Image 1 (cartoon, each protein chain N blue to C red):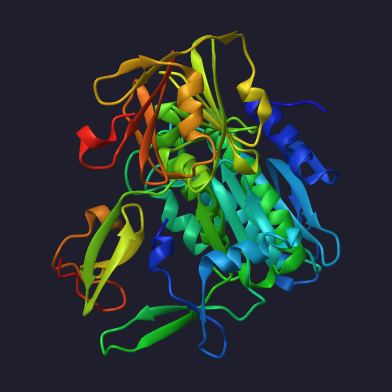
Image 2: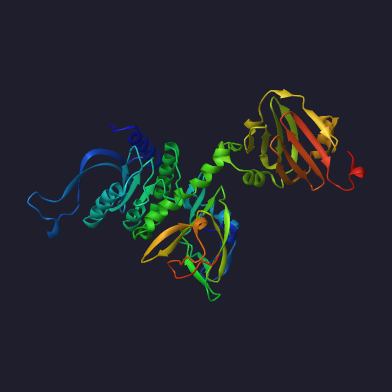
Length: 326
Length: 127
């Protein structure tokens, strides 16, 4: 298999990974219509043919559903002409099809100019990355993740129901919905603070709290440069000043054990880890707050447990403060 | 994208309300329905289940629109409150509306939707 450029190679490999077999790539391929038994396509040279570079992905065998992908490696954003060309190819293939249903997709890591959307919408061609009404730049890796997501979803969708995507702009909208949420993901990933284990996916405070809320504290310990909280349900949270890892993966709790610095009460008097554990273990997480250099969780709405890079603190939240010193 | 999950009103073909969280939890157990489940979020196919999204309209009634997919993005976008016609609704900042622009239509993100704009449906944006 030869590739014209690196983008084509990566798109091909992604398509093979996502769809298994039935993926081919062809250069200067004369795209020919399936059925030429129409008087309007008769000419002295035979049925119309057009040379294109195309990644062909078979989504379904019976009935035959094929995705025609155009990979545009450009130095600037794709223009309407690039989309128009693909619209014409897909439209013609469908018009003179012998039973095969064709969908079209244009992938352009540099993005698209705003005029492209109307052509893609009206001709029901998907575009990756999406146009989102403000100038958003996605890096090539993200664009290729979008492409992979679309292929995986499309393969599953084709097996369930595909006819409702034929009428414009249903297929365009389907692709848009699958890739539109990358905007929020990209913003969250830029923070690089919360990570969901074991996938190591970029995450958010909200998702972290959803994972730990209501879980019971089962154990606490400190590692070199981090503290760890083991919770019921197999959830583990590891805190360091720069990142918070959480999820169902015991490996994030691994490291060199150290003796933590432990404090208690508002005045942060020194105490032992055993003292903090005697209060915290068995209690459920009822709130959380990220203060940057430490993470604090509420326990049974009675105590606040703080996780620092070098240790823990515990405070009673009951009033009056003087009467509830630990 | 579009309307935050907590604002979506789903009903079955008999008009009986559906709890979205419970539905998603149940459908997660049917792998063939999962179109995507990755770092971006979860997308489930529900086109064959007769599920409708209720959209409030000017006269106080609801318009039932069939739902083919349910999307649960892992990262919620900024939420805005908009009054469109008689309806006040919460939408994410990247929700797309089609508005009239002279003799043509154009797409506008919710964050750029200004009072006075007229949607393709004829509804006016008040705030």
